[in-house]
View 1 (tube, rainbow, N blue to C red):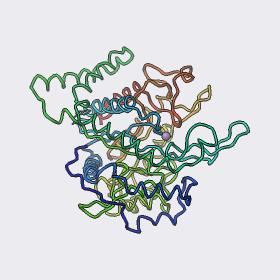
View 2: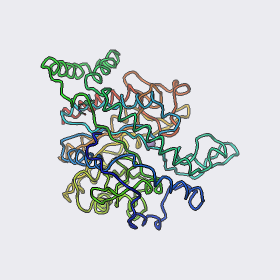
View 3: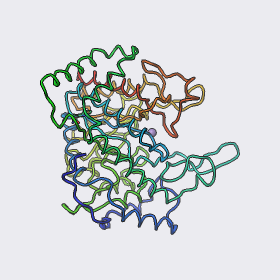
View 4: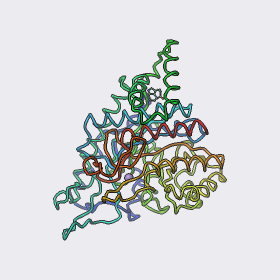
Length: 455
Ligand code: TRP
Ligand code: MN
């Protein structure tokens, strides 16, 4: 995040079009609207400084335009749901570190710039299929993410509390502050990131990747031997992304860019619309159609080609390069049938979107001992299917979106140094979906890098 273009956003944007969503019966919203507390929090949010700057958002859009053309690759990674309590220096650092480690491997495999993006600094709101959760004979509101209510199963904790939006803002600000320090202040130096990967490779379980790791090592040493020591090696751009679910939070952080007079949602650089809230005439699509940020839409296996075209026309009518990313989450068993008609329909309109695979959400199962989990094999198979489909259609596989953490948790099964069900009782931490742990994330990067090299 180099910030020379940081336009100042003076106050909440006032264009009435930014409020049209209010009449559209937005799905998945908390039940706090209309309370005095809610109004007070929103007006406070409206006076707080932007978390990201319009100039950065524009740079990101140009990077994504390159990804759509096949000249860059997007890596999005982070928690299913961030939590306030896990926003500690150590854990944020571990996640940034893992994403950077993956990025080095992918940069080498793709021989292209990798756009590094965290599901971080704002990923606090979760859509739920049921409004309530029942345990035994107690029924309480479902957990909707730390920005709405608490995970503890008590009436106090599960009550929807608007004050949490302020905590979410503050937690996002301190998370972003650390990310900026880590990625601009020397920590992200390519050579140190590479040396961390050498540590990973020391585990014999990963001998399969020795050749690729060896090639990267030789490339780094070659640069060093030549005395190459340019600024670009020392820093990395890093962007923040989250699902724009809670519309009055997003609206309050939407500001007019003083350079251009245009509205930017300054809660994060990149915002996506979930599979559950992407209806064409729905509130989420309407709101995000009116801000200038690059936008993602999650597409599941029931999406038709026409759905995708309609979304393009609504969210990217000007066909602006880098504006729109489709994140497909089909499931390993479905991607080879479900993805081609969508990609084909979009290709035939001539529209350029970034195609990203989310190999996590279509592959969720329940383990024998009752945990929500995913098999590393299925994740990998969906990624393979994604590359196969794009190769056969002559389109561009533009990125990877994963739920991961930098910690050594046990939530997803398998990998070369396999996680097994027996570990869940002690090492399963996630409050929502299972994440790849540090080693599984890196292993996936090596496997994707091999796929990119063969593209
Ligand atoms: N600045 C370059 C980039 O972001 C090279 C680089 C520096 C890098 N540190 C990195 C690449 C860490 C990947 C990971 O691509
Ligand atoms: Mn999830």
